Length: 259
Image 1 (cartoon, rainbow, N blue to C red):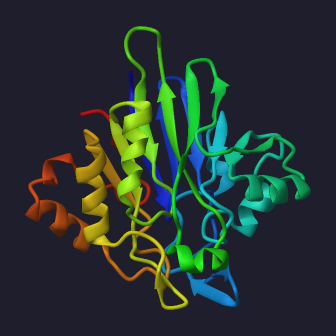
Image 2: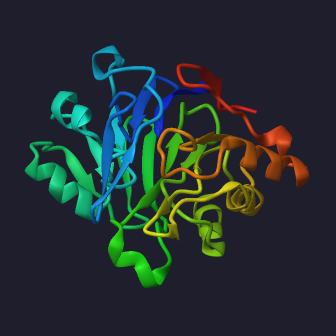
Image 3: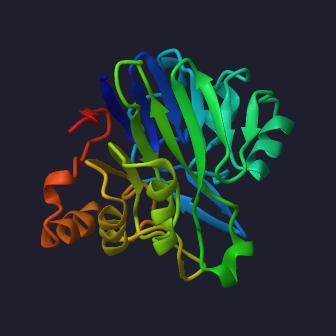
């Protein structure tokens, strides 16, 4: 099966799995605009996205890890098709429904739904902040997408969402099976003095823990709250002998997810 990722910016990607296309975490604001992250916190975008909504191909659905301004921005709210299926957390699904996205579906952890023939999506856990500060940030989820053409085992890709590294993320592979690819949200994001997304070392920890054949890093340099650049992750992976599994991609570029 052909499987590719086109990187638009931040955590916004186009996943093409066989004949299906998914959009992840749509953020189309231009460089210099600010994203609201809650609790009075804003962050300025440093980069321009590689695409705008009118340049997107036909979509089979949207995967949204959580409803932060750098993952679903006002451009997406205004210009995305209101009839698109959007799979997200229950809290985000309720708000998207109020905004007119009638096909938004809030998924419970470990819930599986089918988006199209041969395309299954499972919500998997994530933790956006330490437990003592969880109320300060919205709930977050990762997703595992399984695409099948009927000719063999499904192709399985894990999109981490904005989670910190936690040993219990091993449940993703224990429950769902080995991963062909992982799209990992990095950046070492700092908010209100807290680390709220994986830095380079935590990202390498997760590669070791779940063992995907291919890992594509995203969400690492687009906003001022990102403090751990891509080089931190690449060096951490190199020092652990993992460099051959990592596949960086530039904005506007497309990479294969197959090994």
